[in-house]
Image 1 (cartoon, rainbow, N blue to C red):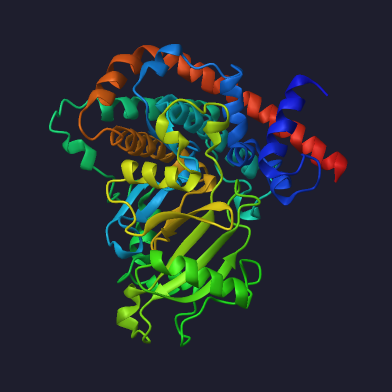
Image 2 (cartoon, one colour; image 1 turned 30 degrees about the vertical axis):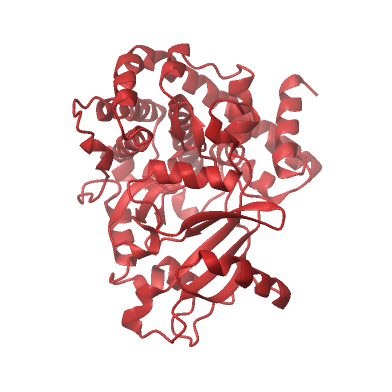
Length: 441
């Protein structure tokens, strides 16, 4: 076993508790494409930064530290309602803060850039039948390498342009991305999110609440979905009720355990709590009900290799996520908290009724993506959203934005080269895992 294989094996075993090649469902999924591999193994990205396998331009580390996503990639942006389930404004923004911490903005820039190139490759693989996926994807137009490179440049240029504001009043800290016109690659997803918000035509069928809860049943209860939900034994149910009730904004009406959620969340337990008024709600009062996720939280991926960058990173894992999310979002979830329970750290947050995620095929396949510049449109939207998210790390000043303006232009070429080189390495790592899973499976 060579040095690369040893590092990959050690890092996967450290986080997942199972060595690669053991047949773990998560590892089989990661082996399906380099994009999925990147999603499922954020710890390897930071191991490679820590070991200087991935070398970013040194000047980028002169940017002020700021809260970062930690696991920044194309599918960790999407549509949600500000203020969680109780909000009614749909925005496009980062939607996953499980690996958030105080760190280098360059981490997010590089990781997103790698994911952008691998997303395009993933879509080409789906279209050619090289990667598993729906048959409807085969034969579709897919983003070519030159288009992916152009999208990467647009992402970085848009990030820079968003930080190049001369607005010393800091009003841009309150900017968000909202409506998208019908010519934009995100128009369909935006409309879908609006329709799922309370009052939208699909709220009763497609909202996060409706998908998890039978809204026709009284009293309201979680749906019987064995592939998604596991019944909670009576003693654990009572334990959840007792310890979680103080954090809720209303009565706990039902509890279930969520199964198999998240590419990178193996061995992290999570529960869903149905919360609402104790009296039976009329259809027009269903906005008072929502689903609260209580998720076991592990240490943010960057911190194993970079533990001493910032004092706040010494906070408990869930506490750190709460602090970062509150900094990075304009209007965070109204229900966003943390607790220590059963010897672990747990994150508490409301699930957005209108949450709509973005899959690679949504932005990298089809005529809109290829012939009408949709893939590049998406990259620009993420560049703007990420810049606003990073800038909010210090709402007192524009020092972060000023530093980006001074440093990023001269480092963009070196950053792009590092991103392209690392995307090739991830593809090789995925091939290694695929071979291992095939041999041992």
